[in-house]
Length: 206
Image (cartoon, rainbow, N blue to C red; front, top):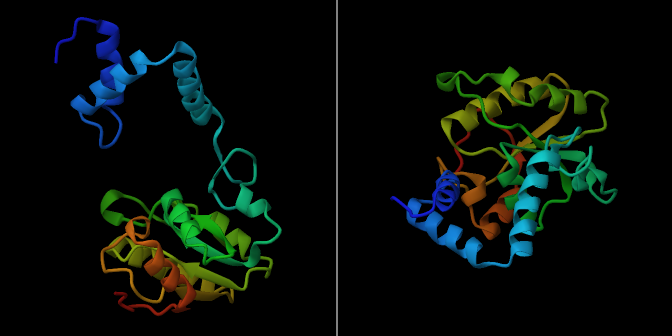
């Protein structure tokens, strides 16, 4: 695609780097921005700049946050004795949308994947073990995808948490094998949280 404006082409090139955005869609977005009032585009670009520079990870649960501690960890109405362990922020959003869970979270930042060279030390597992150390946490829910990597991560965390005397549970049913939490419908996910059961190695969910 050769454009008459090098500046427009540069904008299209950058927009096309976003996931799911092809060149044609990037062109439509760029032209839409070009038609907007300058102050609108300034607000748009400023919001992205501030997000990139100021959003941080919660010092407690590793969720994204605007402050040292995220809104969920700061909420006194959330059950601090229950922690739901998820792979990434998309899973937190999916579970929150069900309005069925009132505890807190821990975001691992990925799953164990030996094939990709990702081990427990590459995830936020140390922070999780520190959180359960003082005896405040009674239950840890392993809300991980039903992939081989998710199961491997679950086996590892279950062993480590059992050593610390913490009750470990898992989502009950409805999450298809190989599925991800972030793509599961809210009703199914909410029911799976409400009907969670003790974690069992080798248990198949579906």
